[in-house]
Image (cartoon, rainbow, N blue to C red; front, top):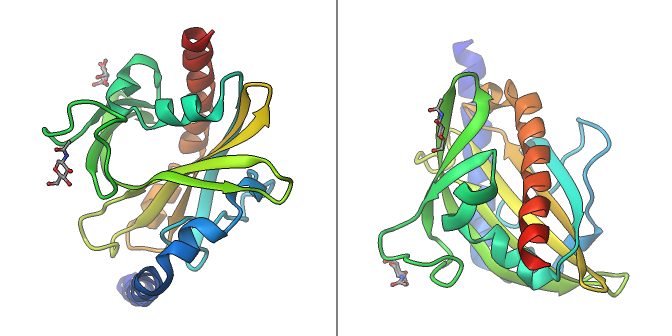
Length: 225
Ligand SMILES: *[C@@H]1O[C@H](CO)[C@@H](O)[C@H](O)[C@H]1NC(C)=O
Ligand SMILES: *[C@@H]1O[C@H](CO)[C@@H](O)[C@H](O)[C@H]1NC(C)=O
C-alpha cells in the first residue's frame, strides 16, 4: 500500500511539473485555440475530457452533464459564475463563499479568485466543502460548425500544490441561435494521492452534476422569460 502511494505521488509530481511548464509557455494556446464546443459527455466511464489548466495527461475520470437552456449564452454564462447566488438555485453546490472584497458576482470575479464551495449529496447526512480557484471567466471561441461558444472554469485547490488531487470544472456554453444555448458542465479528476477516495464518490457526483444542470435550467428559464 505504501509503495503504491509513493508510486502515485511520483507520477503526480511529474504530471504537475509538466502542467506548470505548459502553462508558462503556452497558456493562451491551451485556453483558447482548442475547440471546446466540439466536446460532449463521454459515453463510456473510461473516457475523459481535457481541461484548460491540466489538459489530458493523467486524467482519471470525468463527471459530465449537458442540457439545453432557453436563454442567450451570455445570460447563461453570467448565471454560472454568479457564485453568490448559488444558494438560490443549486441543490449540489448549496452555497459559495468568496473573498470579502468581492461584493458582487459576476461583476467582481477575477481569475485566481479563491472560493469555498459547500456541497450537498456526496456524504449522507452532511455537507462537504471544497476550496476552488477561478481559472477562466471570459473564454470564447467559434466552433468548427460556426457556432460561437463561451467558456468558464474553476479548479479544485487541494492546498498541497496539486499533490493530493487535481481537478478542474469547465462549463462550455454554445450558442444554438434563436436565444437558446447548450451547456456542457464537466469536471475531470487527475491522478493524485486522494483521487482514489474521490473516485468512490463518482456515482454521487454524477447524480449531483445532473441535478445541478437541471436546477440551472429551471432557475434561468424561470427568471429570463
Ligand atoms: C480583490 O482582491 C484581489 C486580490 O487581492 C484583487 O485581485 C481584486 O482585484 C480585488 N477585487 C476588487 C473588486 O477589489
Ligand atoms: C447543508 O447546507 C444547506 C445550505 O446551507 C443547509 O440548508 C443544510 O441544512 C445543510 N445540511 C446539513 C446536513 O448540514
